[in-house]
Image (cartoon, rainbow, N blue to C red; front, side):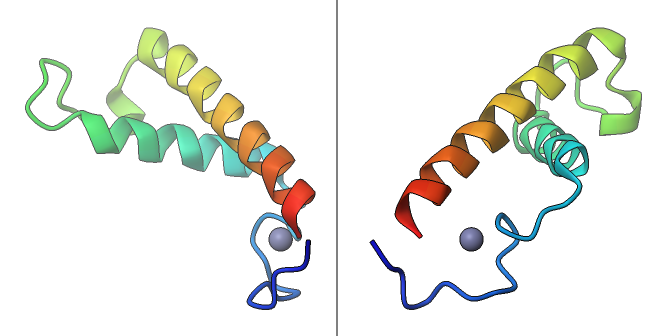
Length: 73
Ligand SMILES: [Zn+2]
């Protein structure tokens, strides 16, 4: 399957820093849910427990996204 809107600067295809992408995803997931919770603080201050959990979520999200992406472009 070819996606005509897909270009050579695609963030996923050109990612050479997968760990950086996973970390960004972890932070984005954290930021998307912290509003109004008891742990409403910045990612850097989330604490080791949440950082471990969200890095795991982030890695899973990025890896699953990449897998699907590669199957469709
Ligand atoms: Zn791509």
